[in-house]
Amino acid sequence: MSSVIAPATSDTFADAAARRRLAEVVEIALAEAKRLGASQAEAAINVSQGLSVTVRLGEVETVEHTRDKGLGVTVYFGQRSGSASTTDLSAAAVRDSVRAACAIAKYTAEDDCAGLADPALLAREFPELGLYHPWNPGMDQAIAAARECEAAARAEDKRITNSEGATLSTHAGLEVYGNSHGFLGHQAATRHGLSVSVIGQDDSGMQRDYWYTVDRAPGKLESPESVGREAARRTVRRLGGRKLATGKWPVVFEAPVADSLLSHFVGAVRGSSLYRGASFLPDSLGKPVFASGVRLHEQPHLPGALGSTAFDNEGVATRARDLVRDGVLQGYVLDSYSARKLKLQSTGNAGGVHNLTLDPLGDAAGLDALLQRMGTGLLVTELIGFGVNTVTGDYSRGAAGFWVEGGAIQYPVEEITVAGNLRDMFRDIVAVGADVDTRGNLRTGSILLGALTVAGD
Image (cartoon, rainbow, N blue to C red; front, top):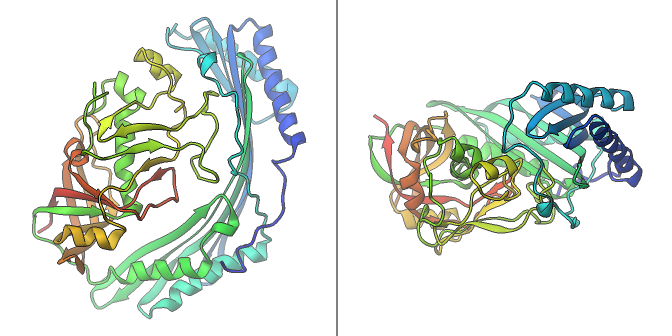
């Protein structure tokens, strides 16, 4: 680790007094809702602060300090609901917001699926997940880290001719949620990152690429030098890109872009898509949706992970569970409303999934081994555009990457399109690498698919 990336002490959101003050605001909101006759109510507060510094070509380009706070409240009168929000956390302003929500509820239609989460599902235990690691770098330290990162990228190869800048960011926040079932929970969390994007040029033209590191703890970030060097390496290797002849080939999605396949799957099994009839995987519970052997599961209590939490946005307890086991769909992604629509039970996913992980499949240890297994085909390292139809599963996206023969990269390719249908693509997964990218909430290694249509010349 570079000496530039070092933790500093700051307990802005960790002390009990700060949490107690916000809890009191939530309690004021709930008490006011009850006084006004609401049958149920919920309130959530989020306060945060952060710093973002961007350096380009060695000069400071932007410096941004953020301090945000806000309260959102929802009230229910039977099956009518109303919501309001405020950034003023004074008692008077909170009560005004509750009154506004109550007034709105009088004009909304009844909805038999509206209401709080089932009390039996609310979290009762709050494990320590190690999500809060405050970092308060001085301005000079933040600028120095961004400069070091960009300088390392520009010095890595003489073909790096320009930069889109390097950015260091820090973020810390505290969330408090409570409802009229008696639930009150809080969570403090941090997120820090460093990224850089550079431009390379030779006789073939120009290319750009980037790299980044992100973690809840500053001491676990990659060093500025290593981030910069990786960004330069990824940029230079794309120079001299060619087109491909149209054909059908095996395709490897590199781990940093493979998570997009998981996001399409989550969208298809999300409750809101299912009850609206807008999913290409309707009525798939208990049926094969992936290749045999595939395991896709949530791990909401991983210490320090970016998707970890003890409870979802409705206070429902999170739990480890398999969404897919041996290729078979085991469950949906549901909040309370969509669960009622589908006559099911909330899965603790109000706000999304939690560290959704695709386990390695096959004997491929990493990307190189996966390419060896593929033999001849396409390695995709960048996806462009949003050509995905979530109703039919039709998939068509612009891409860039590398042509592979004999298990080895031969040359970069660009201006191509990869196309198929997600239903078929999920069933056609041949292997998943152990090179798991943990920099987000969707965690997977590189993915090898048996065949996709690759459109080029």
